[in-house]
Image 1 (cartoon, chains in turn blue, green):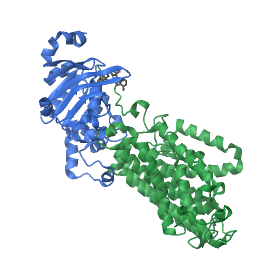
Image 2 (cartoon, rainbow over the protein chains, first blue to last red):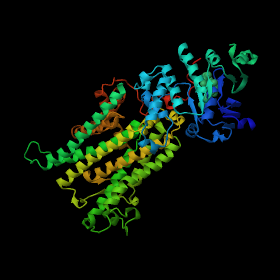
Image 3 (cartoon, chains in turn blue, yellow):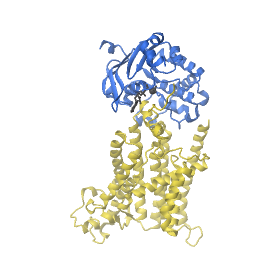
Image 4 (cartoon, rainbow over the protein chains, first blue to last red):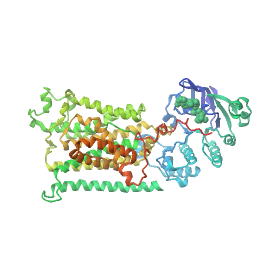
Length: 249
Length: 389
Ligand SMILES: Nc1ncnc2c1ncn2[C@@H]1O[C@H](COP(=O)(O)OP(=O)(O)OP(=O)(O)O)[C@@H](O)[C@H]1O
Ligand SMILES: [Mg+2]
């Protein structure tokens, strides 16, 4: 339990099965406060399912999931977990398409989210400033009043990252942020994530090896629902089992 | 820039809409009461009553648009809230008859005397007090909606399943109200009303006043809906409509948002029903008929879902057509209505208003259950279809 105590996220023995198929198989993972961790693994390895169990979308069959070493996430729903400070970017970009870029960010801003408060809520000057900053960061200043539906795939990815930042979470779960991006955009995204990781804990799932290498952080290889190897990108790419199941294909 | 411009424009059109309604609220009574019958500009009482009915339907349509257009809840049971509001008003109107009923009982309505009931049942207590009636018009539909929504939204019943339960709700209420021992007059319902607040319901003046009040309530309903949807709450609500589970991952309790508008909407429908009953002079269980609720949804679809103004335009224009059709070609009305619905959903997904707003006609871009597609229903969180490596 000592390890759990010093961690921001602690998974131990987490299993999930869908109709008998084990998507997660006694998965254990520890993320330290302020750490950025990359998760790689072949299609169907359980990466997205892992994020689902952390964020309350899927309940694990067995296993412990603790935030800050003490808060049991398996007992909470999506809303509560989000409010505890876990933000998530989905594999398939999910922004609110019938809202403008600005409105998407407004909805994501850290705020009192109770329905009655929202009826009378008004953004204050500092929040507008924050949105300006975010728009700068995600390079969507010119698209501010554009409907999110009209953004390119890469821009949607960035908007979703912007929404993630707007929530000011303690822990960010980022599922394939570079998917569908050009090489230049991918590079920008890596820089952005490294910037974010200076102040927050981040878990990034990514297939793009160049991208993961560029992040330069500890890598966990997921395979058939459990961790196969952990270490630097160089270490894991030398690991024979990893080469066998994944890299060498 | 474009959507900002559209928002501004919408505000202007909302102003215009309210101005037109205000003008109608003044003009119709004036043309009826002040212009002599011999003049070509005189508006007959028949029309005042008919337009008053349309105003109530418009308010009902507005309430449906609030939940369907902005929260993605396709209610096929809003007629229940409308009818409940109507029954509350009907109870008051029954008590206003007093000893002028057939049996001349000063307290008991005729049907209770007929059933040999010795005294007023508890749920009729207070129904002779107008102020209490006004409160109950909001409270009864509101409470039912709150209780229903509490269970349905918490257990995350959505889409077609939710629609079916709303339909079952109104159907069950219809069956209940048909029973004599429910205490609401069985299949005859409540009728033979005489006065409201001491004014005769047969008076042109009373009818004109009821008409104007209906329009004012429609305006008020519109203002409330606009206030809700243009607030930060409204932004979150639209987000719930488009990607409910995504909103939860942002830390919003989607069910609270739905429960609030659902309850407000039911109250609006109740007010519409309460204004409808004194104008048509009767309320009976057929107002709970599932077909009524479905028809209301068609008005909204025809006018333009998720536009508020469209709901009003749809309610008035479809009912206008219905009045004409049921007089000229009564057998064909249901076919005409069905055809209209199909044409609108396929070719005019944004309804009549969509045509004016210059939207391109794009079939099927808005599923009737509020989600863009089955895939998006999950908020796109299913993820497994997006292979990106
Ligand atoms: N809701 C579900 N019902 C049934 N099976 C599921 C469900 N969610 C995931 N699975 C299965 O669990 C396995 C792991 O899926 P998951 O999405 O976690 O993989 P992944 O590592 O994210 O893969 P990818 O790289 O393709 O995104 C897959 O075989 C998938 O088909
Ligand atoms: Mg995945």
